Length: 322
Image (tube, rainbow, N blue to C red; front, side):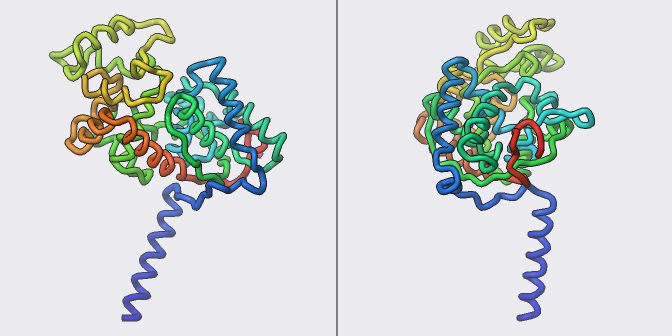
């Protein structure tokens, strides 16, 4: 029995080592991490986000997307904030991230926090808190953000290929999320972040032009909605900023995204895929019928996602390593 136990624990230990070596690990973060070292960090960040929001209504969507794109590459380590250097093209300059914006909000928050508590609060934590504030200030829920992330020192544009694409089907999405320890429930709940924001034509052209050999338009798109998308994104689209809002209330955090999804008025193929399996469609219907149920699930999944970490330091400038 003792020999079997020893073998089992050796096997378990090997698995743990393998997991640490190959996966971003979920660290033990704490909601009161800065209570002693920087007690006013959250209110300071909130005031910066609020000020930016007053000047630009697209800031919340930008911050939420930025946090998501950060967590999905090397864990929530602020690597998406790093600038490219002469020798390295960083994540923010990878194709899926070219349209990310509002980095200045994180810069301003970092400057304000450094004035209060020098060399204490990571850029990764600032981004996680700013993303929460983005949701709350847009009419969504609030929650205690677990803190204690460290900032990463590596950022590679080539790794942005790991981000879930707007053209993914449900199997591709499930695999992509599972690789980060996220479930199908997390997938459906986090997709609700598309209640905020705007999509450029390039991200949904596949659904409205040359969809299939005998069909120009994706038949799952509601016909008048498809026509409206084609009018703003013609086949030979040239305006750089042309596109469509992700739902009909793009600056309000609500459950409209799910309601429209059930009506065939979603923007991305990846959105539409959420109604292609019984389990995910049941969740979509649940969230469409109850904003409260959506918010509860979204908060739970955001805490799970934002706890995936992998950094090593507290950066003094969010755009460059120490």
